[in-house]
Length: 573
Image (cartoon, rainbow, N blue to C red):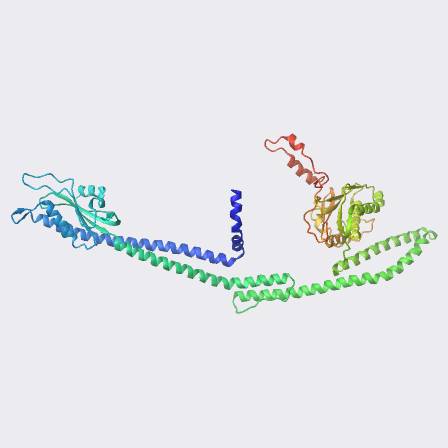
């Protein structure tokens, strides 16, 4: 069933997509369906009324015609016309003549049939002719096949006329619906017989067919007309909406000068005017923000460059003072050391501001080359070991067994990793810091480097804000390494410049996990990461793993327990 469903869904997918996206098609189709339903209901009602009217008229006409014929036959039998030219008229001859006489006025409107009655006695006396035994009928009907046994029994049971809807069977075997009216009468010798009038519905069926054809033709034209009207009406509403959607897409693409064409004074025109007014206000605000952003970037760039000259001078003077600090008293010597430390932080801040201004101006260049990230990680770890010794942390590197090669700018990636490792050591509360490398099984796919600490961690929602400029989880926290608040922001920009991404995860008291994912080659699409963002040793991962390993149904617990666990969040190929 799933295979059949997929096979059937394939050809219907374009139609389904068109149905979801085209409101005009939905409205017109709904109008056509509803109009067709209304026309069908009205057609059924009208045809039913016409059919009932035709049946009532036919029944009244047939009853009147049949009663007249019955009266003629009764009068002829009561007149005693049983002797002609001195000869006794045979009942069979009399009945045949009576049927021919009554049928002569029908002219295709009705047929006459005479059948013997079950109540007829045999010969009344010697020399008296018996009742006729065979049926008599018009030439255009088969008498015994046209009269049902049920109606014959009813006619024999009652003296009043009986009627029934039946079928007239013609001599050629064809049949048609008819109204049959019958009555039990006596012939010229007093023998009982059954006389029937058969009124076919030929004219009524032609009239009803004409009514059906007229209603069907009118219904088709009405549905088509309503569909055209709905299409025109919806088009007047949908066209401005589609125009507004196209203009909105162009505005989103940066073409802020686009406007809707407005004509008239109706609601659609007011919508267009409001849309154009909104577009003008957005254009004005965006231009103001762009100008303000441009001024801010220019200010940061100009200030950063202008500060380099006095900073160089101050650095030279501070170095001279620092070299002679032993000759000063203790307070002045300590001031010299603080001056050098703050100058280092100031230079780091100035360098970060210059780098941010390059990213904002789009002037950052990528000098990519095939690099084994293991060498970059070793340099970063060696540089962070003094800080780790002071904090009491241990740096652990995993995944060095196989090469982790990618086309990267080694200088920028080293800066990213140095920032991640320093932050992990600083916030790790003296616990281990794990640096993990991994690469995808297929050549040219993504590579990843992750840094895991077990310190204070991140609160919910902070993982998204940690890459914002100048954002700090704890602004009052002392920074022994002189952070500027721009390191992670620059690291994220470096990752984007490579076509990769930098993700963060953390839980309060459970540490943090930063993952850098890069494509194997420059410009290649990034399809996933070889390292999971949520580490396997986190509390959430442990709970999920415990639930996943819990026995279900008849699955043995020993089999689940023997399944190999994923180590360190690395997907092993």
